[in-house]
Amino acid sequence: MTSLPTLFDVYRAQRTIRSLIVNTPLISSPDLAESTGARSVHLKLECLQNTGAFKVRGAANKILNLTEEEKKKGVITFSTGNHGRAVAYVAGKTEIRAVVCLSEHVADYRAEAIRKLGAEVSIKGKSQDEAEENYRRLMAERDLVPVVPFDDPMIIAGQGTIALEILSEIPDVDILMIQLSGGGLLAGIAMAAKSINPGIHVVGLSLTQSPAMIESLKAGRPVPVKEKDSIADSLLGGIGADNRYTLALVDRFVDEHLKIGEEEIKDAMFTVFLRHRLVVEGAAAVGVAALEKRMMDVSGKKVVALLSGSSIDPGQYVRILERRLGARRGRN
Ligand SMILES: *Cc1c(COP(=O)(O)O)cnc(C)c1O
Image 1 (tube, rainbow, N blue to C red):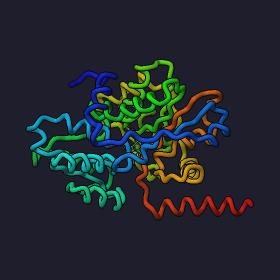
Image 2: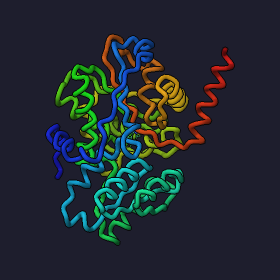
Image 3: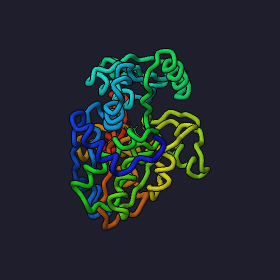
Image 4: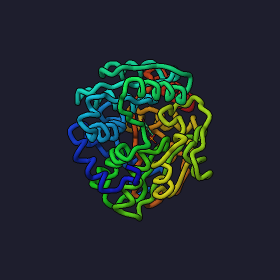
């Protein structure tokens, strides 16, 4: 299949994955609406999704659409964590063998979460690229079926189901603010939303220090990025040298791109806790960061920002909160 996924594929995905996902809440954030001048701001809580992130949508759509023969062989993937966990979860529920390849860079608690779901974890390499090499070798050696993290029509269509849920609750939404790394999430949501209403303004949110897709869009081809640490580790990594789908879809359907910095993200994680008592990982908070720091004009608009996941090291999370609570106390 080389053609790009369409809205029809997203509707089909919605039926396919229904039993493995939850229709996550869409809550209003009156404080953010007031501070930005927006007509309304809503947060879509994929941080409450099964496995702690939206990735289960794409993984479920991909795995449930495999042939019986492919299901018997088992699946393999590489991931910074949330995709690996999603694949392990879906494979566990459907009794399919799964191998998840991680780099040494990935936090221990993430590897442990994947093992707990019954998947085999293979940790090798200093970078995401080296983890990918290990993945290719094991795939060939053991004849496993690949489930890639983002550049696959089934994955993209699965993530796109988020747009259907948002539009069923707020059909006249003006602006969607969605995180962007490999682009499966943004490609699916942007394609589905714009196919339903071309007037919706779709904003992609990348990391200032690792804007792989933005660089690739400028170059007109996939550009590799140097790996750095980030509080939003789920947004690290490139778009793949042989990218076939997400670059084209993001280019076609996304209206605006913003880059978010580390301190802005941490501030937004604190805001999400303070205003909504929700725990989110760094990647999830970029939309709130963009709104809070007034990076774009949303006055009079109905805005939805996605909180994409909750996978964060508890110690790291508590330190972020403590520093900001201390700063607030200092001011009082
Ligand atoms: C994977 C992920 C993203 C980015 O999704 P892409 O499809 O790679 O662009 C954003 N947030 C979280 C929590 C993720 O796990």
